Image 1 (cartoon, rainbow, N blue to C red):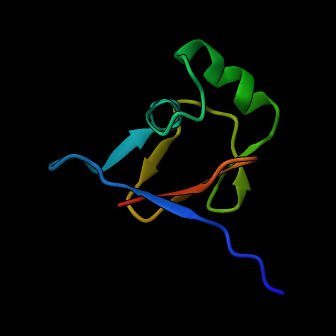
Image 2 (cartoon, one colour):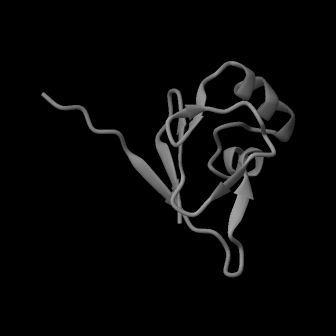
Length: 77
């Protein structure tokens, strides 16, 4: 039986082309505080478009998919 991952869509505000990864993780409640963003990133549990990412300042753009271990995927729109 095939497994399907839930993908949540996050809409950027009008006029915005990107959001920093750390901000996105807080926005989707993947981390409770900004101070914990780095801790989550160094574990290797966050991927952007399938590639491991450890930079919280990484610009995530429309169409990018962020995968967080133990949570739903997030598509930026």
